[in-house]
Image 1 (cartoon, rainbow, N blue to C red):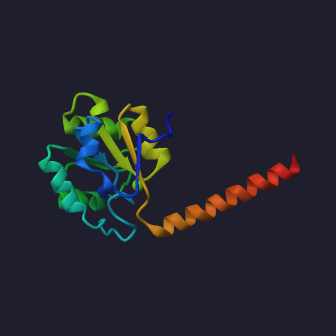
Image 2 (image 1 turned 135 degrees about the vertical axis):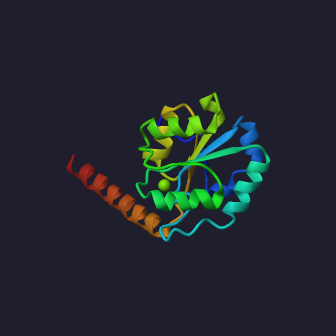
Length: 164
Ligand SMILES: [Mg+2]
């Protein structure tokens, strides 16, 4: 299924080297907004240490963000010392292909993408036949909005049922 992630985690730092090895992952493509940083551009706690630990285990990294804000993405990339692609237009294959080229990994199934959105991250990654990892969005506000949306959806569905 194109909208089903291969793996779901609470946050990116929950992913262990054991999980990556078990799934033959050699490289990771990272989303930025709400995956690595919150709406105030604050990085997730322990992120740098996690990246360094994965790097020391041979995992390669590249950022692929849909953001048009090059300065913001560049700042995160510099902080983590990894290359980046901004304006990557997920769920199209454009940015993910660019990231793959940068990573220099031959087979798509050896690459995992980590992101917080089903319709951009997971869909794009599954279309590329890469390994999709879905995280919870970092920002609580966004979660709250989503909860409201979900409640509205339920209400709409209920009212439709009544009509029929
Ligand atoms: Mg995101």
